[in-house]
Each structure stands twice: as structure tokens, then as C-alpha cells.
Length: 278
Image (cartoon, rainbow, N blue to C red):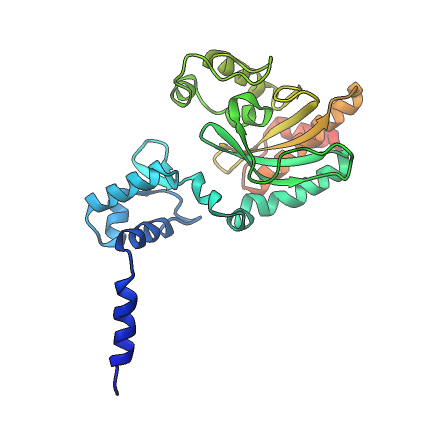
């Protein structure tokens, strides 16, 4: 049997292959939902390449946001730039798959648009949204990025950070101001976050943009870490205390339900809120 044509085809394909790109993509493919973090030595072993090569690949991918250091700094995990490759990937995320029907149900219950966001360094990224057919239309869409420190949803996502971690994230002396409500320094932001954490939710009128109010609560994973913020966008208007309390309970209840679906054990506070909601 003559294998020459098949061999010629393989040689032609190899001619146009970029080894560095191939290695980088193979490296990214080593991460999975079961192996979310990997060390450089482990990656070098799996790819069968020198450690120095893996370190160069990781440095390049980290600079571009495709990988990031895990807690402790030794291991790596996928970065948010992977999400920006396309919304098809967003649709495959467990978080958005499970969260989307909850957003739709919450939207129908409260009559306001609902959103789910995650944090990418100093920004929030909208990964799911369920809008109402009301005249008020939010300008944000899936993929929209906004500053974390200046938004209600961002405040929810920053709650777990310590003061040193916040200073590392925001090394500048003064934070960029977007409204009269924006914290001016990292210490101002930290104090605000501590109050948010104790309260268990954030509700602000016109915090980032006039005429828009936001109610948001944290979504936590199995480790208790805040992995997303679930919120409702409400046009500024007079809302009665009873109505406001019910919206708070429903937003928190939906966030807690999504947390449980991500294997987070509900807190005593969350259980009380769910009982009140019923």
C-alpha cells in the first residue's frame, strides 16, 4: 500500500503549523472543571516540554489575561480573557446555564430587569441578562464591562477582598470618580464593602448613573467565595418600604438559590430570608 500522498499531506500541514501557538492552546486545554488550577511543573510534564518553555507560555498568557495566578501564587487557572473569546463560551458556563432561568423567574416576579455579573480584575462583566418589555431600557448588554469600585454589582464582587488585596488591586492614591457616590480612596471603598458584607446585599439609588437604581446580592460557590453578583435594575422612583423589602428578599433569595445550585451551603441568614419570602 502506498502511503506517500498521505505523508505528503501531513508534511504540508506541518509546514504551516506554528509550534508556539499550538503549545499555548494545548496548555489552555489542560484546564478543566475538574482541574481548575495547575502548576507550571505539572503543565511541563503533561505537555512534555521544558519548564522554561512553560514559564514563557504562562507569562505571555498571563499578560494577555488568558491565565491568572491562583491563591498562593504557585498555581495557575484560566483567566477572564477566555470568556472574551466569544459569547459561545459564556453560554457553556455552569453559572450562566443555571442562572439564566433564575433571572427570568425573578424578572417576572418583581417586574424589573435582572442581571448576573462576574469580576475581571478591576471590572465587572455582564454574563447574563433578562430584560422587561418596559419603556425603561438598560444600556448594558452581555459582555458590557464597568468599573467594579464604582458600581453596586462591583461592590458585591469585591466584598471578599481584604484591605491589602484591595490596595494591590488599586495601588493609586485616589480612585477614579464616576458620581458623587464613588469612594475616593481604597480605605473608603473597604469601609463601604464591610458594611455591604454585614448587610448581605447592596441597594443604591443612582450610585453609578443618575436615574438608575440597583439591588444586588452575592452568589457564592462551594468554597464560600463570591463568584458572581445577581442584581435587579430599577428606574429611580418612589418605592414603598414594603415593596422594597420584598424586592430585597426576592433578589437575595434568588442569589442564595443559585449559590446552593453551585454547591454552596446556605447560611442561617439566607434560610430566614427564604422563609420570609414564602
